[in-house]
Amino acid sequence: MTPSSDRTLQTMAEANCKLVAQYGKGTLYSFGQLSILSVQGNSYEMGLQHGRLLRESVRKGVVRYFGNLSETDTRLRSLPRWKRILVSIYLKLFVYSKIYRDVPKSYFDELKGIADGSGMSRVETIRASFLSEVGQLLGPAVIKRRAVAADLSTGGCTGIVVRKRATEDGILIHGKNTDYEGIGIWNRFPTVIFCKPDVGYSYVKVTSAGLLKGNLSMNEHGLTIAGHFIFSLKSRTSGTCFTILENEIMRKARNLEEAIAILRNGSRTGAFSFMISDSKSDRAVAIDCNSDRIGIRGDGEDVTVLTNICKSGFELENDDILLRFRMGRNPRARQYRAEELVDRWRADGINLARVAEILGDRFDPCTGAERAVGNVIAQISTVTSAMFRPQLRELWVAIGPAPVSTNAFIGLDLNPLFETGSAPKINGSISPRNDLSLPIGMGLRLYGYAAQMYLRGSKIRARLALEAAIRKDSNEPAYARILGSLFLKIGDLSNAKRWLLASLKLRQGINERMEVHLLLGIVADMEGNREQARQQYRKVFSNREVSSLEWDEINPFLISKAEKYYHTPFIRSNLTDFEVSFNFTSGLE
Image (tube, rainbow, N blue to C red; front, top):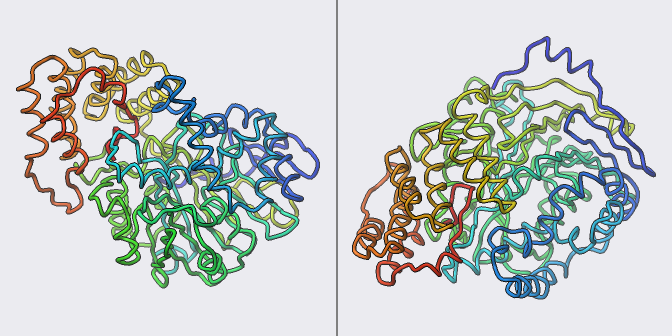
């Protein structure tokens, strides 16, 4: 990525945010697809302004999808209705009710205001803002039961803070990708919200319409925060949850010490990491948290990188499911690659364009090649990407289809919002990766469309889009593997085998290749060729390949599945629980 040309900068600097509407003390501005919302007052009033001014975006956005999982989640939607009802009852009684126990009333009031203003269900609106907590609590239970059909990649993120000698001009930069559910829904309604509560500090958060959570936030004291999803064995409903804590820190902390105190002084629900920077003291830390302890790293370092694994001490790392069970090539690859790029550019000084380039990077360390889909930083699930320069009160937000970080970043001067409540100024843009017209870019867009169609229940459109993606980018093995899985799901064994074999001819990681052998074993079992099936399964659990990357190894759950089907054939009724995932992990990690 490179900074935009002087001509583009001048054109954008002359552009203004458009005043769209006002309601009470709330004001809505827009710049292209980006909504910039200013809300103030008590909690219910801020929520009501949010709901009224973003009514259509809330109604068409992620709230309905996140707030009604038993009906909208692809893994649950195929279940018989009576099973979906049981799932809904279970979530209500044993998950949501426990998450809500320690949520302050003011946040419920704000969410009720969003619901009332937008005309959405209060129940759905409240549930939608706590999707991360549901994953944090259910993930460990799923792992411990070895229920590997569950997709545990929800909530991946890549964050980076560079400061002092590592930067080009000494100005701190905090950047973050949010990798999340809701491809094609979340990023349709990118939203920046300026909150001025009656009680607490003012702050700005980057999010999607209808949600309480902020993917990357900054308060009036120059404190920034970004949350990252963690899977931990010590994840319980025992206190304040992730979504509330990030808002509490923004409203109550003036500096890094006060932010850390908020995390230390109360019990916590779930497991997560926060990247927090303090522009006044020019410090930044990564804080890993589970329900038992917190660990801090990065204080005093010029660069801190954070993905979705704990790196702040033995106890936390030992409780980290992805580390303990030798899983999670994806977050470990993203950590490895981001640190590699930082080391490459540190000597010359890292600027906004370089941070944007890291967030938009698509090099897969496991294959040693740039890919559209793989163990890469810019993923199809990257629905938000933003950068703060808090010392200047400057925000850069990427706008467009996922991976959002491969689109242009728009610069916003937030000083007018903080000082007078008026519209932010447009600072310019940072140009995107110029590969949309290249095979890798065209294939990726079609792959994203396929993911959206599958999410909406249209297997035919998903299949056609995947086939089109392969025609554009025939070198991406994930397209062929997922297409083969899709044919397997619908029982078309001939085409399933065709595309799975095609994927084996392409360059890919060890774990990817072993997953294809598992799937080919399933196809053979369903064809009635038991001996051929066992040969494929044996290739998985007897594999002795060693990667040059110590963490690039075969998922033990993949091995477990191969061993299971080696002894007990996969039969047609098993297809009910067979999941096709478009987030690269295919449900196995």
